[in-house]
Amino acid sequence: MTVLTGQHPKADLREPRSWRRAKNRIATVLMVLSFVLVIIPLGFVLFTVIAKGASIISWQFLTSSIPPSVLPANVGGLGPAVLGTLLITALATVIAVPLGILAAIYLNEYGGKGFLARFIGFMSDVMTGVPSIIMGLFIFTIWVLHFGYSGLAGALALGCLMLPVVIRSTYEMLRLVPDSLREGAYALGATKARVTVTVVLPAALGGIVSGALLAVARAAGETAPLLFTILGGTSTVNLNVFSGPNTALPLQIFSNASQPYVGAQARGWGAALALIAIAFILLIAARLVTARFSRYSR
Amino acid sequence: MNAATSVDPAAPAGSTAGLSKKRPLGDRTFQIVTLVAGLLVLVILVLIAFSTSQQASSWFTTEGIGGIFSKTWDTNKNQFGALAFIYGTAISSLIAVVLAVPVSLGIALLLTQVVPYRWARPIVYVIDLLAVVPSVVWGLWGVLVFAPWLLHIYTSVGSTLTGVPVLGSLFGPPVSGLSFFTAGIILAFMITPIVTSLSREVIATVPAIDREGAYALGATRLEMIRGVVLPHSQGGIVGAVLLGLGRAMGETIAVALVIGSSATITSHLLAPGYTMPAVIANEFGESTGEFKAALFGLAVLLFVFTIIINVVARAVVARSARRGRGA
Image (cartoon, rainbow over all chains, first blue to last red; front, side, top):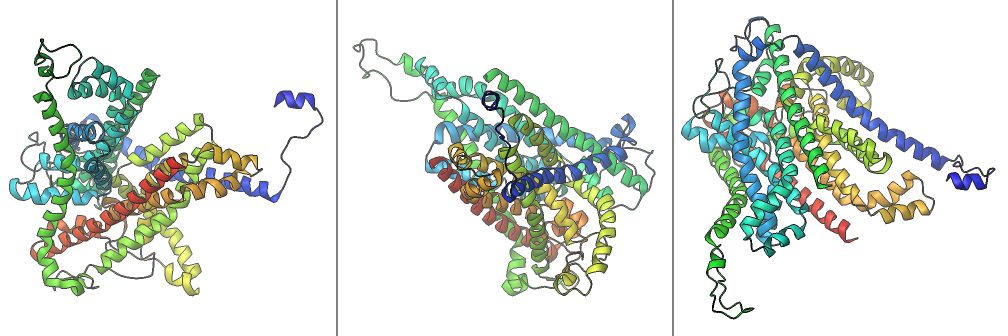
């Protein structure tokens, strides 16, 4: 460009004004505007949650037991819910991530283009669209009706939600592993299982971990699957995730949101801030893993 | 390992006669384990359908088709017609789709056709942030901050439009800030990330050579988008919209907090309503007997609707992705 204009100093290379150009300009402005339309509510929500939540968050809030709704904001906290969310989400991760990775290995390494693998892959995508409340009802009927409310039941429901997400993200990562790596390992005489576990999985590890972290971040904020599986309503810590009702931050926000008491609403905002913080930390961790992974692969 | 040791050392070099065709036990076990994990998806889906329908069977048999799709939902008279909830689910998610799709498409086009890669990444990060804001936080903000604020707007819109033929019956004076429309707006925020990222994926498959061809003919960017990008990614965008619709239909907690919990069928969009997932979330704990069966029945209907929408959407997306690669 600079060379051209240098040779023809008088040539005017600017676009001529016309209705077509104007329409193009308007379209570009509309596209930018649509992004602004998304930033506004996001900023509004984050601002409100931080402004209202930051004043109540303290070590005491994050650890003490849950007071009755009528009590003011400076009494008690949501310790059991914080602990419940961490334990249940961790348990769900332990259940769903290995199963999801194994299923993705089947889809990419063993199933290939066969009908069964394509069908499972398709239904797994469909499963990501199953409403979370249905997962809750499902675990309620097959687990809670027989074994009662427990943190484990909640983890199973969250695990059902995470499973297809983990399968999809892991599958995409396995597909990116070049075949030359697999062939190299085969040439050394390794079995298929060994090739998969020691060559393919490590090569895709960064992407798998970051996909799993995103799935966990989404699951940690889910309320509907927990409503009918861990019951909520407990005001003290239940460390035993395998039996007895438990509670979690999303459930506390849900019940406090419809309370008329100022103290309860303040605790709701505090819980919302804690929950968003957990989700964002997981999201950032996923980003860091991705960044690191892409640097290695380059 | 076993394969290596079973080779007969006496066999002539180059011959495979001594090599065992049988794969080692560990190798086969691993394959079976992965297959079982894969089949788990199908097992869960079948079990969901089976277990929830079983719980709902008494509702299906006592109400019959007419009862299921009737308007009356009266827990005291044991009449459980689902129509008001189906209507509420449809209306609130349609509002969400109408609001979210133009915005999502705008962002997807902005990301793929306008801004350079360097700027696209931060925009994607922001959309990701939007995606991880939990449903219940949208609900909390919606019911305590957004709905009271919207009420002012609803009131002025309602008083302006009263008497106007069609708009007046859609946007009449509001009862409170909690309504179909509030739920639709909140849902729109929630489905924007998924519709954006799916349409972005589809649009990214448009071959660069087609786009450059349009530019070479002197098209402006808008003309190129309308002539090349949109026709090419039509199918995928339809799929993305359907998936967004499916998400909006199943969204529970945010809607339960902001829709106003009133099982009514009205054309008035600023009136409170109810949706299938919201009534399940709100009433399940207190329900017993026939009431509980009816709530399970709503869950079965919701499951069937979302499965159908998702199957159609995924099939459309997969078809357009195949065509995109082939072109």
